[in-house]
Amino acid sequence: MIVDCAIYRDGRRIQGPGDISDALDLCRPQDDAFVWIGLYEPTEKEFDKVTEEFGLHPLAVDDALNAHQRPKLEVYDDSLFMVLKPVGYDPDSDVVTSGEVMVFIGDSFVVTVRHGEEAPLAAVRSRLEHEPEMLRHGPTAVLYTIADAVVDHYVDVADELGTDLDELEAEVFSPARGGSRHTASRIYAFKRQVLEFRRATGPLAQPLERLADTGLLSSPVPFVHDKAQPFFRDVSDHLTRVNEAVEGLDRLVSDVLSAHLAQTSVRQNDDMRKISAWAAMAAVPTMIAGIYGMNFEHMPELTWLWSYPALIACMAALEVLLYRLFKRRGWL
Image (tube, rainbow, N blue to C red; front, side, top):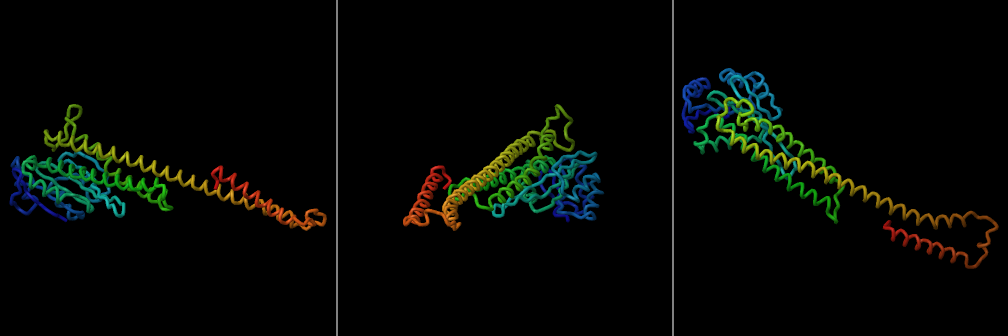
């Protein structure tokens, strides 16, 4: 559905016709005006009129309707199409959720399509309407502000993931706990969330680098203000730091998992040594008792008065000897 349709002139929102085609006809003759249409999970029928009026490319329209796209930047004859994946993180459930924002910009228009609940478009529109100096730069300002808001939230999510990973690491290396039996599954689940976050941040690097390019080595991106590169370069720098943080999180969570598995293996070896030591100690009296339980007729010890106490003392002495031996070697 259409969430908002507004006309902006000289950085300020103005009253205009409610019809999309009339709004576009009003803006195009004026260099300082553009129309911004915001849609939320539109159906194909709802999007048909927008497609027809703004001349959007059918491949981009198909991507905008079906969602589930990787972050990317595509240039068509009449418009520029960019996909971003805003993310959110719930520290209580340790789950990373993602949405999608598709942005079309062209001659005097911006069309934004939102999928999911993580897209910050309402806040972006409010922010820009309070910053007319920024909004005077037209559709480029909208694209920059959306990218900036998405990447800034990446920084917050990376910090929250880092805090939770510190807690998980402390649990694994705690002398008292050493990780519970559910720790491995928690680490795997956390690694899955880091991967989900990486799918949103990693592919966005190339589109932002292209927008930040000065055009000396490649052709400039159409429909983008020629002085906007420093702003996109700043967003690209922030994203680079986020991607470095995500790579660090991924490596660290792999190291934590390896350490936990190593600790588990060591504990299992310790348990096996203890079991083996106690089994060896139990085998000695069992062997001696088995010998004297065979009921042979000619066993000289059977007629000796002190044979039973001597045998018990021998068993006890052997048990003490084995216990001290295993204790000295750390098996008990």
